[in-house]
Length: 230
Image (cartoon, rainbow, N blue to C red):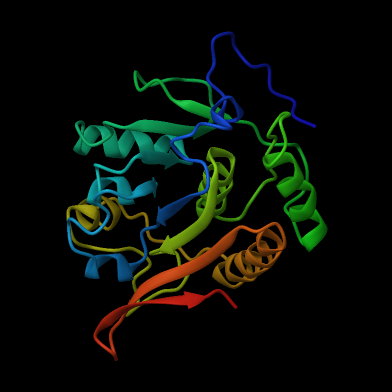
């Protein structure tokens, strides 16, 4: 179960369940892989979005931000102090950084390896009780969970391929390269496991009427396209 001692007056993600604004909505989860550089500045206008980690630099008008590490947050605030202007989602750390965040809790359990781990999670996310999220290998999954709690029935992943492109893990344009590559934050995470987990997660959510798909720019076809996660 969840071991945290939660301070008073903390806003938890489950307190936003059932808001009419997001019921049966479509959410776009914006990651930060190199494909993100193909998206125009206004692409996500008038869309419900969650920008994950460094993508908030590229798309500061996103409806929500998700941040996974204090180090990343400190870097972003120090270099782009005005970019975190929207509602802010934060895991497990109760500091508010002056941004009035929404928090969610993580259950103390090993990383998921099988669909049953996701089955039990989905039932919690769609229920009316505590939304203790399972641990994940990628921040993108936490953003997906948050979108489901908010009421999303369709979730579109952008910049979330968990792949390198031309030797790069991150997008470069709109200031992202300035902070990511300059600060030496390039590393080789377990992309194979992340992709596998995403496939399993999409399959389980589909059983509950929630669609998780991918959107990307295809360089060969020179067009944007949707694709099934498989």
